[in-house]
Image 1 (tube, rainbow, N blue to C red):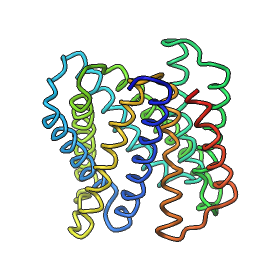
Image 2 (image 1 turned 180 degrees about the vertical axis):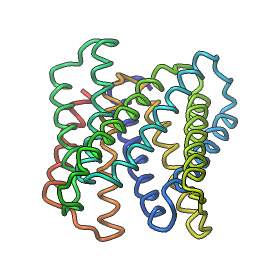
Image 3 (image 1 turned 30 degrees about the vertical axis):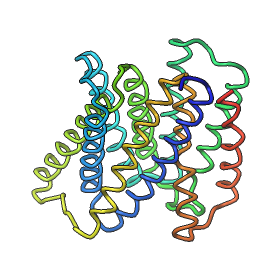
Length: 289
């Protein structure tokens, strides 16, 4: 299925799956260290990709395709680590939307050069979607007062967005008849990077930073499986249409996180978040036109 409509469907499926994965991962990090959650969830994501590739009897792609996928994995790992640090040392209400907007904007610029400019209607949709990401990602209440730590958090958030933007662009270059093998290669590199960071931190701090509470493992695994689904849907969206449309739609993932937190945890949805969700809904048909 290759059409703007297919890009829209797959892009929204990617956003929904990624957002639900973030929700699951967020719950897991309340009971386990963030690096443990990242490592276990990425292991689950990698396992899911390998199993799906085997079930589909996909042929292992060329080294060229796997190299692009590996580069995407590095970008994803950088984005993941930088975002965790940005949320820890900066202002959460700034870090999350900044990283998402940078990640969405990079493929738009890249696609303008590689695929030509989108239509005027799509440009309006992109603008609405970026505004929606900003407002949806804002917490109902300020989580931290302004302080001298904000500039550092902002730089880390920008780095996170660059990492995720590189993931979007690099994985789009891993074009092959196979879908899940390139994603498996990407997840493998991300997992190795996360484990390497954990080892370095453990040596630097002279103590273990990897703790595995068994009761939280199911939530970690669910986060990994949902992340795998988001990756697969994004790649399908990009194959069906333009990279910029797929990336902007997939970057609406904070909406599903906010909705799940509202219904399952009774977290309040602020007026700004409600406006962002409405803007996202309006942007979807414009981007998919």
